[in-house]
Length: 429
Image 1 (cartoon, rainbow, N blue to C red):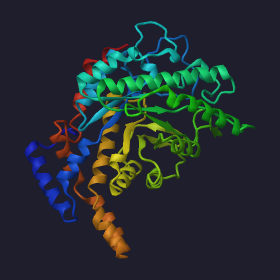
Image 2 (image 1 turned 120 degrees about the vertical axis):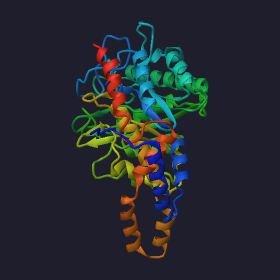
Image 3 (image 1 turned 90 degrees about the vertical axis):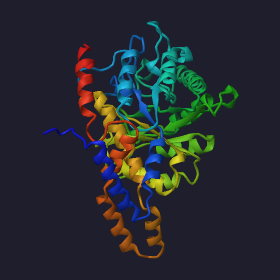
Image 4 (image 1 turned 60 degrees about the vertical axis):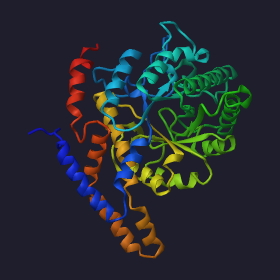
């Protein structure tokens, strides 16, 4: 018995033809869905590979409410090891991809470089690699894991010197992102998330939010001359975090207003909301006003928001809404999770493939038929057909998608991850 075995190409093709016929009965063009799914870029987050540690040379990386749990062996210790891991990951993933870098993954040649002094040259190794791999790059300022984030505030800090430091860092990150976009030949999505907030009942909720607006306005000042076609700035909210359980300065309401009035992209992270909130329901509302959104796929479990993505209803429903609204071209898709308790290559492959499965499932939805039944008042028939879609031969379409992309179908990628762990990761100490 081999639990990782997949059907051979002939059987996959036969199963796919059966699936095509089944979906055709509800008006779905499966070939078109597969092609459209493969074309959607998914941006792989760099921080799963090393447990959100970064490669920064500094005396301290404390502060900011970011924590990966677990001690699974084999994490990447430098840029070369990380890039080798990404190459292994990409070999197992169907479709278009980018790599999403955080600022503290700079490579500074063993020299200490302050974050407000980072330059594009500190990421030249990543840009050279991306060009060779034929993928794009995205970026993030790192407003955490730093002595100037020790008390939980950065851009909204009451201390002007600390605020100024982080403003300079944000501007430096935008210049780096612009350079990345120009160098790799496609826009770089530059996402801003700050950990600012209070553990318990602040007496002043207005002041930090006013300071955050003022700091961001300096970072996004048009006078800086940064090309918005190359550096696409996004801002990300959160309901609560480690050390900011009571009050988060950058709430959903804050960033919705800020992104709209400053013409920025709003980021929706699936793990940054209350468990009873449906992120999928926010999309059709926000896209009435926003030109584009950034979607971070993650998986919340109770208070912890960053588990490996699975092909569950939460992530399915996000891409179902986007497909039904013909809005897949109005979002940027990225991953955001970290789990140090399991093989990190496997975590990437599971989470990325789950995200692409959700995109494919949305594209296979018989939207026209369902919406027609709804218009005709046939709500029982609509609900019944929605339920029957769960039993459609989705797996056969997914396997054909993987085959078409030249990547392993089903679970047949697992032995390659085991080989890489044996030959590469197990030698890291």
